[in-house]
Length: 121
Image (cartoon, rainbow, N blue to C red; front, side):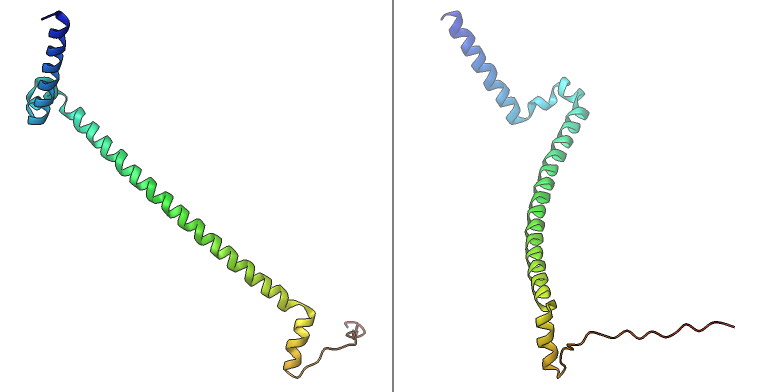
């Protein structure tokens, strides 16, 4: 066997040993891992926080889209109500509505009545 074949076989053996120790959990008994357990727990905690923040941000984005949709609907309803109000405020519409009540529109302008000022004692 040549050196290349031996190094490939050693790498393959090392890789399979690493995967084997990972799967059976024996890597947890190594001194390096045991000394760094607090840091490993910290990393796991950070990963959980990162994943939960992703879900939180996704939910906020969904809520934002829903709120924008509701806002568009409310704006459309507001626009239609304002259009109806403007139509009802027109002088011809008001005259038509009061004629149904038996009233009629005055054709004479209003007269201003002014009282003379009385001097105080």
